[in-house]
Image (cartoon, rainbow, N blue to C red; front, side, top):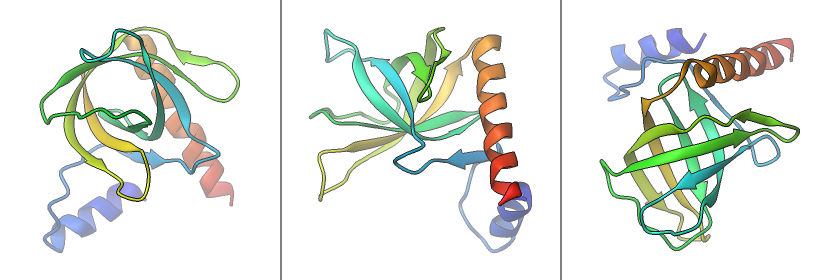
Length: 136
């Protein structure tokens, strides 16, 4: 379904560059993560609002600035119950924006180095979320 939507968007002239199926989460469904960032001596908690096999959309509640092209490490990812991935995943910032009405900084990041175990975990999450949505 999402592939068809992406194809339709491209036909209509959209500048959508994604080729991977992406799932988004609401506030109650977000995944949690831990980022390693050059400006912070401590790991930074983040919320993951969307995932695909190519990257993540995340937010942090800190006064940070992520620059396009900046490299970070997603050190761990967990759902509400368990750790989904504890292997470090190297990511690169593709875009970032502050929400003026909140303290959140959102960023879209692409995976630059991701292990097979993390790929399998994300594929499982995406498949489960798509199945859940298709059931109603």
